[in-house]
Length: 80
Picture 1 (cartoon, rainbow, N blue to C red):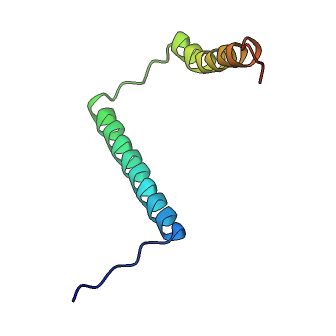
Picture 2: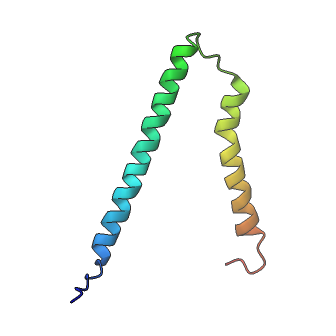
């Protein structure tokens, strides 16, 4: 006779998904850290910081979000 397995509760499903996401995030961070460490062993010279890259990383996301807010919030037809 076959036994039916009970379906997981919502709580069990959320915990399982969160644990999988946590493991994937930690695994990605570990391998990224390992790769950067190995890259540092192969290239021991100091890292040259280019100012235009720093400004682009700081300013481009805020400009894109600002343009999106203006486009979606102020220029939409119904305004809602």
